Length: 432
Ligand code: DLL
Image 1 (cartoon, rainbow, N blue to C red):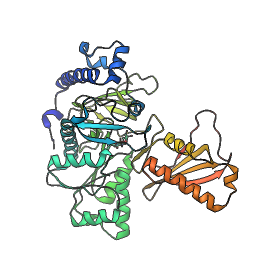
Image 2: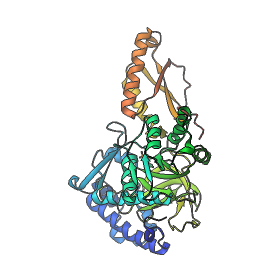
Image 3: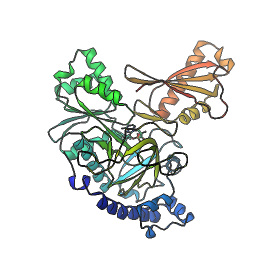
Image 4: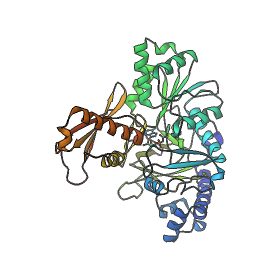
């Protein structure tokens, strides 16, 4: 039921003491080893040596995704590269990409924290875990893999894609726990139906889902269609990857691994703490990471804390499932996409206008994005062949920037509605 009971059930006063000690340590470390933090702290007259309470963290500056981009690739690492044993990165080309690193100890901690989440969700060493997250620069595949091995389960590192094969393997290898995005779980249920596979005949019992937003209604549907117990788990590469927080078998909020991450929930406008239990932006500080510590990282994810104790016995605070974003980031097929990335690509292509619309839909449990882009008159009325070549070019450039395929539709100049100021160019029709 617990992976590290002593830590997961630590009395709150002891936890606060541990957090303060660790916070002081990490602040001192970044002030010494990372010029970005040192300069900011000096500017604000902050001396980590003088830290006496957790509340004083509020005087410290935030870290933004842009700071990671500005320091691409290794500028925010707090140890020399020779002590880094793993690197992960977000999609996107230079200027948009973010890079994170892990020391040997970081990988060790990461494995434990993911094992905690698997264990909390009901998984044991007797389980056979099929990991259908992508293995690669994305943290999902490797993160869950190391945690599952740490737990001692049997791991099937199948990675993402090829749904029929996933189902075949699930049948043959007697998978008991499925790890992927919630939308992919529903997609699998669809394909099982097409293949005439009855989910009740499978060995599947648990589903651990994350990396994209989903709803209680989706959970009910997944549980019913696959005959499993679905739990939510949350993380982000900038802070570690999966392993930051996860639901226990109560399925009522995600426990944050608070001995390793300090949580704040702030009003995204005033950046002041919201009242306990109110919705705000999640801000995280890593307490133990060596290679890539982050101080007050603005996740842009909206959630609320659930201060009441959980019947499971864990003392770590719970947060509600993610309720949205305080920026315009989209998650399409589990991949993070910023409209600005698309804008930047279109800007570079001759013949396109800087006016576009992004339509996001979910069809048969699969995300689809269509980029509608205005093109100059001469192209719009040009031969089909030229238009097709332009569409292909845009598609290719977008696929390489974003890491996912999108549909592209050319529209006539001045046909898309104009906005005063920052208009909403995204039409997200997905109903989760
Ligand atoms: O998605 C890490 C991860 C992998 C978490 C596998 C869980 C399972 P990134 O690619 O950096 O990392 O994307 C992080 O995804 O800021 C959220 O907006 C979103 N996200 C992650 N988990 C959830 C979740 C991984 N359970 C971004 N519910 C985050 C809603 C989630 N959104």
